[in-house]
Image (cartoon, rainbow, N blue to C red):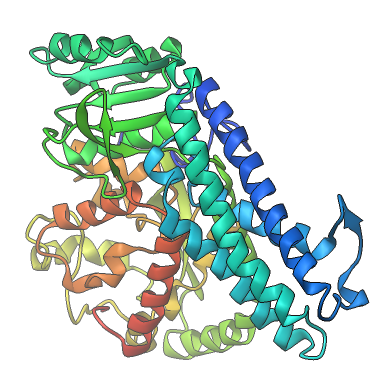
Length: 483
């Protein structure tokens, strides 16, 4: 199969990147709910600190070096605590439209306690002698827990009885032809919801369906009979970029989105896959961290690069130190991937004669143990993964990320099945789930490799990237699965 040509009419960036940079992307109803929750949290935190300061008057005052300004009768220390808590609430979905999220009192308790414990640790290491009075600190901590949870409970009760709840939510239906009419009738019995469009489930990932969803002004998409898991990521990330929530009915063939929250919708049990309050911040942060880490890595590893260059020249005088190979990257674009040379100069020509020895039965990737093309120092460089370090230059150029599906040579991609190309919808990486799940040992079926890539795409988060990086370091140290 030939490699699909990237089109300039399609979105040419990573499917996880937002179309625009949004701080808040909420529907009218969710904006009201967000503002009410935000105001109630600020008032609750302010009340807690006000009560703590009142009690603290009987003990010792806040040290002057910790009071940079006073606003509305509350010291600067409070406003810093409040800002950090609200940012954490937002990033963890506590201001989202989902009732399960906004009423997650366990998560609320954890986040508030985390801020206070973190302040305790940072204050100790900064200056153990400079700290707020214990009477103020612990009183404000426990009072904050009580007032925030109490105010959120009160808000949920008020909103539950308020006419604001009756503001209409536009829903786009995607289901089989046999189920569309029944679902539409069931939803429109509830005056809170209105069906603004529909499409058949087998067209869920088509551009026409996505355009219809965006044009309809839908705030949520209800999906039944999910298409192949190989294509599921396309719809999810497209909706997330547009700030539209996705609901999956339990009858869907596969519940791919394990991050979904169980929630009753129009009398139907669903899994709600909510968009984030801070749309695009996580992906932008990923790219910033990629660039910063690549720059720091290249500076620190410069002496190692020089040493490896000398070893390669001693091991194989003929040929360059670096090896550049055409790989397929984001949206099928070809780029030059950098590596330290670990093979003889005419390795690509020799590969044609070695194809019969390929140990991958499906023939997509070319792997053989004891490859005769590898130069003496090459075995060490490959086993230690040092040969991959020059790809930090590709990261700086925006062609790769630290974590993502591995970019493969043109020879391999030409053997792809159509659904395999879904892995090209995100920026390729130096390491990924494939590398920490067996690396070269995971080679019996290329479909398994692609499923790992698609799982990464569908479940991507900054925490997942960090987990993969840490696990990669462990595997590289113990030299598992590479040859």
